[in-house]
Length: 586
Image (cartoon, rainbow, N blue to C red; front, side, top):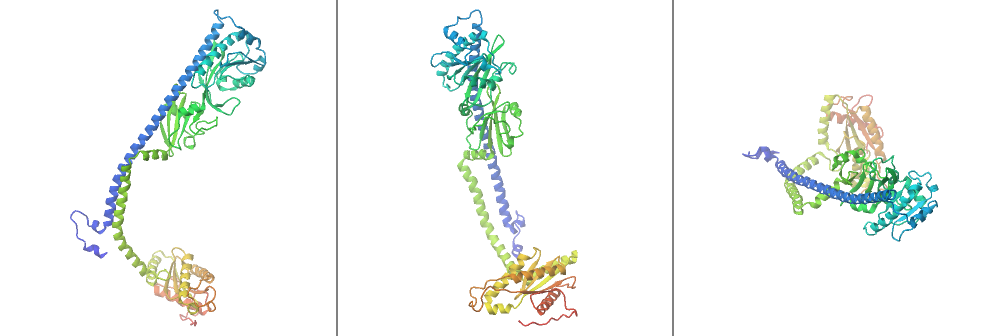
């Protein structure tokens, strides 16, 4: 633009800064925005680390709580085991106490299908079954020589378990001594109606079966997987069990259940709705989740989602604690259970972390972050608007000078510029270049019958049909009145003739509604239908080197099409080569 040439040359700015002030504003505000965003992102990054550290700390505290509870339950199970071993060992040694009538009465009933020792109300139940009921049950064998000593220990355990559970806040937890001699001591007390079925269940449950000598030669306490309560659909989380040995002979198992709700309370629930917490053992069994799932077969990694499908559990146990990140989700983990038998795992999505970050963000600081970009954008918009207005006005004037206002097609001047460009490309690349000259047949009759406003509608409909049915590189234009022309780059005379014939058929199908101010219906009823005649020329075939020559050739063939009856395409001159064409009155 000429006004830019009049600008003075500044001492400390390049001339380009004055010639393009918008760019200066954009660059200046852009640098300020980048600096501000960088500082903000750094603060958010540090805050995110603090959020993750807080979650890891909470997980560690929860793990300590579980370790404390498991340690207490372990102590209880080991105490019952030691007490049972001591009672049996004393009763089988030289210092054995004389048996009393209750034990003798119970011993006498040992071969009944189901028998029960009489104990005071509130003490643990002592219930047994006959040798026949034990037949085929792995881990159970009736040994009459050991039965009195076992019953003596059971009677003492009945009283101790009853007292300890009645005074314990976790009295709902079931404590059981299962004797390999075919009876059990359990608290809370049980009826004996399902004793045989319960003994069969004991023989198949991991908390008893996995304590048999061949499966647990180390005689250590073990944790059983989640299972459903006997004769109920209620889930228990797990059972801690430890074997009882006297004189190196397996005498049974002490089993202590930990209720699922209690363990869920211990692992807690993450503060975000989408986060999930798991308690997993070394074998991959998921004991409890914060979602309260009622399945007993949840396993790592099958039930952890696709993200962690290939994350080995041994890697987490080896690291003890830490976090992983994959596909938009964090996995935080912490060993629990005192001896590293369990691990607690949190899964939390990035969105939950960033929600927590924004909840902890200072509101005044957040308001400043939001306000500064807004102020910068408003200022930039005001400055930019002043220059955009003039640039847009110039672009609009340019568009008006190149476009026919009625049809919005290119006008003759613009069409001439496009022709020059395509002609130069044709000379360079040797591609064909064709042109169509399109004229509406009997257009004067349309104006006379429906009015000039309806005639304008016909012109607009023809222009739309040209735009909708030509290639992107084709150039339609209105060069005057009802005459239109189409420049077809890279089209031979035959291809242009096919295009012209297709357009002619499309125009014949158009139905244009008359304008509201059209003459009365009796004079001009129904939609307006019209046809077109088209002349076709090609620069190389017809030796047309200039726009005027090509227009003249296409125009000559247009009038030949009209002379031949209208509503047709003409792509060749008369056989005699005459440049004249008959005149057809309209």
